[in-house]
Image (cartoon, rainbow, N blue to C red; front, side, top):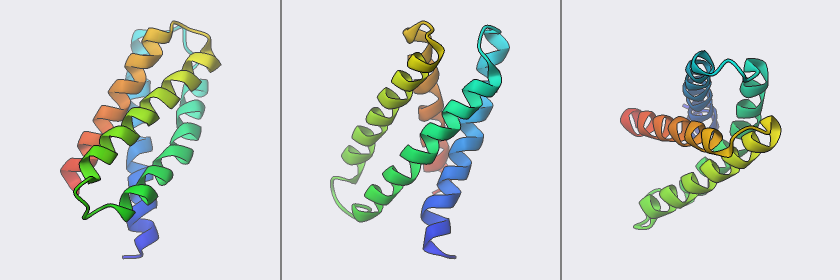
Length: 115
């Protein structure tokens, strides 16, 4: 399989599917959010952050610092996503933090299971 597809496109697609699904469930419990806006914001953040992380991690795949680097990068993504969502929706920052945390933990765990 093409390394670009395997290393970037597949993880990005799976992340978007997982995070958008969680976003949809979140919307069921809190009707005050614009679903299209949430989907668009999460899609945009993932298009930027997911390939970036995967490219960086590919350089350290067999390195002893891989796991530490993965955790650090995921924390950065959670913070970035949280801040962007809080800014866009001007909503309670705590809700956006929980949403970002849940989405990213689920996509990370799912990714770890299939790799």
